[in-house]
Image (cartoon, rainbow, N blue to C red):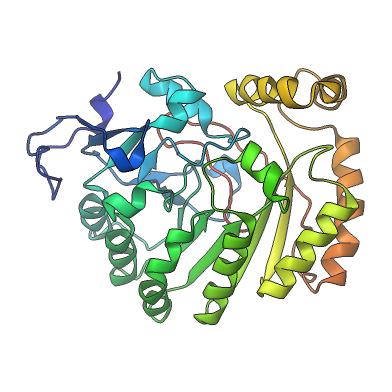
Length: 339
């Protein structure tokens, strides 16, 4: 595998057994059955986003590569191929852990050239996936950003964020902190099929309540909207009602896109579970990664009245998608909030 870009010249606080530059340790534990952790020393923590991406932030930090949430539609799957791992099962079970990410980030933020631009977390893989409970990388990352005066945002499906709410509340007194939760599927059975490693919809609604109770606003990414499975009026209306009840401050709805090898991984599941939908998907997506303009307009017309009905209006149109290129080194991203 291509681990050269992960090396540094010192251990910078790595876990025991990673004391030498470039060393990769593979770890398997009973509590994470079927998952292999590849503990690495990262060379850099900040990923600069090209200006052409038109995103509302200039930098990202990713504590992991790969994600045990195992979402069938995850746009980040193709990034695992840069490590000579596959974008399917390997992405779900072969997790790269940047054990020294907080120390490297602190060093980068201390540079005189750093202009305290907004940093986004959770744009590639979830920083609060289950592995965070083992490695506890986020407290150090949050502390480094806050202490350097750097504004940041977090996007997550992970209820482990609850653990760090006191840290985030404290950080919000020093810098602009924005927290977003991803919740696109309100039906528990469907969620377990498509996002088998994620917390339940109820658990994420409880997380939204906890975030707002802590005094932070919580934006919700209703993304992706999955054609013919989660885009019915009944599903969206029920989900928006739950989000409003939980105290969400706003919503963003983005149609599912199927870029690169993600397309095959998702469609293989669809052909097994919902084969009758395959012809409709071929018409809707053609040979590309994105839904048709006609579908985007249709979804917008369905979502806009719900946005107003549940008090999420006054923001950018919630149904507009943002087209983002894939970057092998800086990693592909989506916005944690649309400002």
